[in-house]
Length: 107
Image (cartoon, rainbow, N blue to C red):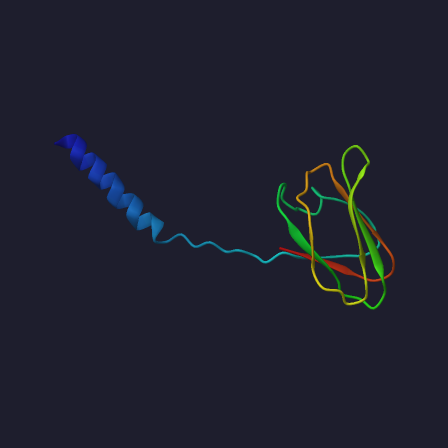
């Protein structure tokens, strides 16, 4: 009897505490200029695909390089381009942005 009371009490306590949990999901919106960026430094998650878009007036070339310095993918982003899927990444990968302007990475 004491076991059942203890289990029911703990379940009741857990059910009250679960109602107060709120999850805040911040949308990812990273803007990058010309340069070399580490995936880990950008706080991007491993094994997740992202979208990249040129939001400026110039043409930008983007490369993803793995830990062995091999080009895994590349995109030529025309001015105000549509979104392209990139990834999935590993933490040792790097993104190289060449050209004037800004690219935006979103989920």
